[in-house]
Image 1 (cartoon, one colour):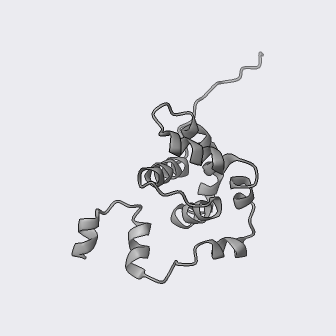
Image 2 (tube, one colour):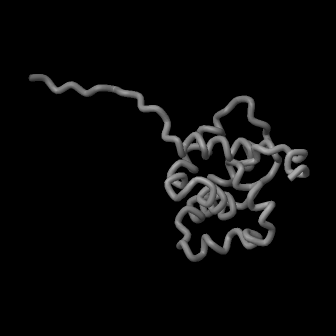
Amino acid sequence: MTDVQLDLELPPAPEARLVRGALLTTLKQRRMPSAEELVASIEESFGVKARWHIASTIGELVKLADLHRTDCDYLSWLMSPGNLDAALHLPKRRRARCNPDRGKDPLLDEYMRSDGRKSSLALRRE
């Protein structure tokens, strides 16, 4: 019998798609959170498993041809030594302190959890 290795391409994990969407939304809104804030936000929104996809997703986004120069510079800065890698290795008790405004405004917290899907007009109607 011969050894056969199948080259199967697996679909991306659901967390990877969520992380990609969150990063693209962040860039579209022209926000540039620190690495700690970004990791804390993604973990809070999508769970701890989503952390595993942040670095690879940023690496993929940097290669996009239609990315604005400012966005590319920001993503490259995140990937530079001491930023994202340090944020991904923070102890859990320190990660909880990265988002000091969480819990101060329930309406804003609800909006942030909705992943930016509501328009500001819909938010004003609530």
